[in-house]
Image (cartoon, rainbow, N blue to C red):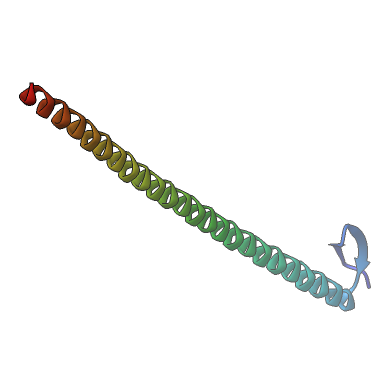
Length: 102
């Protein structure tokens, strides 16, 4: 005796009470597919979060490197300035001694 119509994997089946097994199989498959999809979504979200952390770390590394280069540049410029001031002082001092000798 046929008394139920179910939609099983996009196919209409006329079933009797034995057909309920088909409904359960389809339901289990749907749940499995859904579970796999949810797990895949979670995996993608974890991958995205890890990727964002990796890029953040790279950005911070580049920023740290740029800061170190800037510090080195400031030290180099400071040393060059002090060297020039020293040479100018020596030139001025030598010039000043020549003025006193005259």
